[in-house]
Image (cartoon, rainbow, N blue to C red):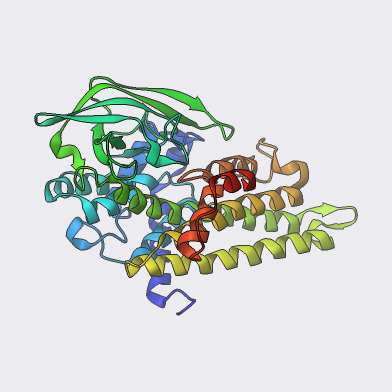
Length: 395
């Protein structure tokens, strides 16, 4: 396997970076502020990214994309995160590809162009108060009534629900089947009567949401992949999500700015970077980031071949999300108190401290890392499932 990006891919990266600089104007960045989770300014930015033909870099041409591979799509995601462009990650990198694989022609024609032009965004409705890490225990029901499904239940951790146009919803359609067998995926408009949400505030300063379904009716055409076939769609969508969550693109410019600060700042008669422990910390960060880039190349190469398995996706997710915290913590140690200052004269104006808090969320987004370790053991290493009481003790 070639461990370097090709000259063509490096050229594409340069072109994407230049386009992003034009989209992420100072005025647009100021309008978004720290509210990257949604709202009019974010939607305006997503549409601008679409107009610049950036969103579908790795999508097939038949669905409106540029026809590159998952590697080029990752390059776009990495560059977008460098400049904090609010890309609709769940919609673009997980729901879209799952619809390509499992959606009907009608669903593809309706949703895929709308995703690429920035006019439609999805939120994921999986977790429930009694079904978090054990998604197969969902209690939200979808009962067939003529040409419709009637949905009742509650979800939690439905990130982006307040700003989404649709919920990609897991619901039980056969209460008598084994729990993995009786689940279906439905596309639920957030404008539906009976749908509501409440915010759940989190440590990073962003919100996730509870969502409620009170006799929500959707047409039978909202069913994706066939009735009671939802588990396969859930695992497909989550594989895409897990592979995307560990992207370190946002931390690389923070590393560069920390290195620049340490090189140019005097302390105790010398530069900060002249201290051996600072040199060691920065060298460790650079080595860790380089190692994770190889993981990303491997995962995206597997996605390009259609050969990404659950173990690989979970391993990338665990390694990337936990490494993000480690890198942010080490850089904060180098900056000392300067890492949390937010004034105009602060080196990073609080961006690194914010990134550190936000990194915690991704360790359980897409499935808690403790559960991912079980998946890595079983799907990646071929080990037997641990007894439930042993798993509870280990976690």
